[in-house]
Image 1 (cartoon, rainbow, N blue to C red):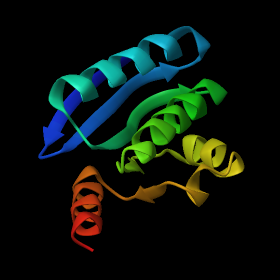
Image 2: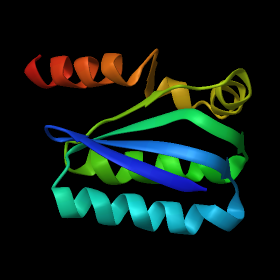
Image 3: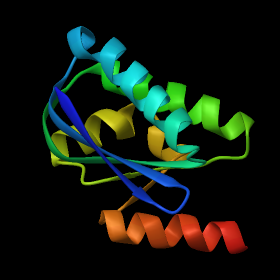
Length: 117
C-alpha cells in the first residue's frame, strides 16, 4: 500500500493506494501522522478511490486519526469509497462520526464550510 499526499490549506489529503491490511497499517499510520505534523495540518481527508482491498486495519487507521485530530479541534472526512469499503466502514459505524462525501473537492468544501460555521 502507498499513500499520495496533497495539501489544501490546513487540510491534508491522503490518497490511499492498493491494499490496506494488518501488514501495511502501521506504516500508513506513521506516514499520515508524520506528514500531518510536518505540514501542520489540522484536518484530514481519506481518499479511498484507489483502494483495492481493506480489512479492519483500515478502520483502525481512520479511527486513530479521528481520535487524535478531534482532541485538537481537527476533523476527518472520507471520500472515494467502493461499495466494499463503504460496507466495511458502515458496518463498523464509522459513518456515525465521520462524514463520507462524493469527491475530494466536496470534502475540502465541506471541511472549509464547517470551519466557518
